[in-house]
Length: 199
Image: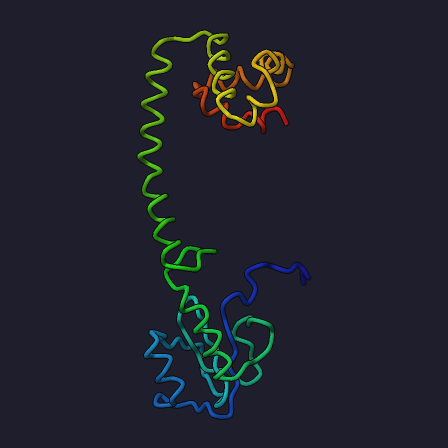
């Protein structure tokens, strides 16, 4: 048996054990779960009166079975009803938000940005076609790259265009630039990642 740990183990299922919980459809906790959109999912004969598994991602629950572990659980330990409700409320407020986004305003900004990506790609492709329709040589393209780099204040204040041309002649940089030229990358695209190319 492998001892390898997996990131997905017990990622969303809570095991709730509480003396207030009773194996009945009208149990207050079951009524509350249903009001929150949870559905019952049965795995054979659930026979533990005070124990239930609840998955907050798939929104399913099932009664526990004596001596049988039906799922890996968060923290490898049971919690009480009130503790589960506190945890659930924390995640409920982020429902519908992208991972690592915490407010509706940030989600809207993210959605607006994502909506702009196809437009920006289309604009870039149009610029690419226009630029390469003039059939620039590799040397002309390098000249345009260098000019674009010098438009950035952080470069223009600390280096010269001659130094950039010298860098472009270094073996591995020259090879990389020739590849980008063959891939029809715009000078502005290369200028934007010049720090990475020369790292």
